[in-house]
Image (tube, rainbow, N blue to C red; front, side, top):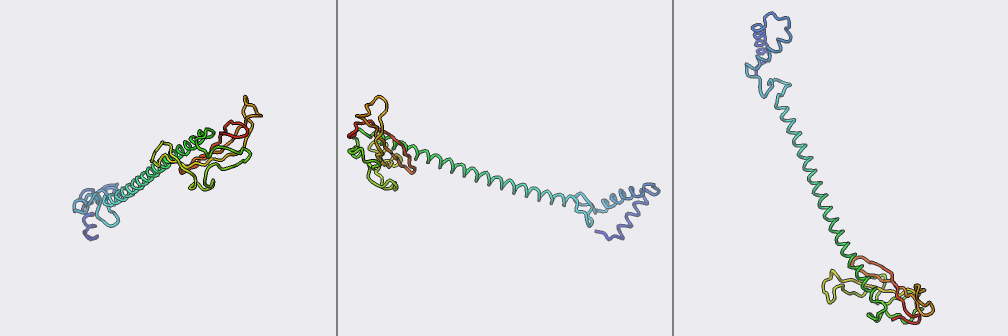
Length: 213
């Protein structure tokens, strides 16, 4: 790159050669100066190669930074979308498992309710109706691990359909209309089914006042 004295001489010669007597001296001087700089090879990368002016090189650098920032934002957006999708899959899986457990536990409660009063399970026979809040099954009501178990599928070995159950006789009540209240009672029960979740339901059976089969 030329020193400033040499550049001044070139500019002066260019001015005197191209615009010797111009009333727009300042404007034409700038134009002549740019053309002279281009002629001597000082114009590089779309701009003059002089201190304080970087030309298109500065623009390219700025665009590179913008593109890198944009790509970083896209990467963060992709990571966020991936995490969101994974979380939604986990939520859907948990919901599916909960519904399966709920269905098995509910099925177990219904299954045990249908066995009340038909001597299918001897332990469900109420021999003393005056003994209220009496547990008819073995185990502790507050500890599901001690409850007896059964399977919704007869002779099934698949644990997906296995359930625990607990049946409690509550108290005798007035029978519904159409029954002789002096001879019959509505015996009320609480039936719990368990398969990861516990489903509790109530039921009643109509029987003679003295006993229930």
